Length: 135
Image 1 (cartoon, rainbow, N blue to C red):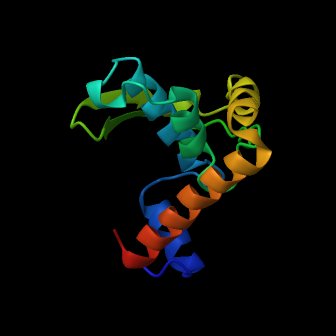
Image 2: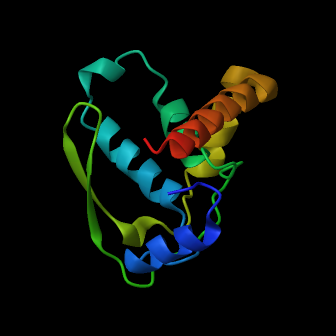
């Protein structure tokens, strides 16, 4: 799908029964946070707060809080993680991420405002490139 095709995105969301206001990055951040609780070996030594923050902020939000949008018709979602492990989360948890502001403050202290902004921009541009390629 053409990344600039807003009508196509709305149509795809409608066909998937995805509420228009619901932020998929909130669901993705929940999945990553759940996955990290299993202590995947290849994340040893990684900054887990930064990983969750970058997933939550990959569309330019979550600075410090994603727009709180509860799912009006929650479902269980199973996600396959990079190590092929599956985690199941509920879309009912996509309301307010009360950990977001503290997580944002912590990673901002560690990386500095410009360093964090650079990391966010890098992930955001990579996401745009993948969307444009269709991968």
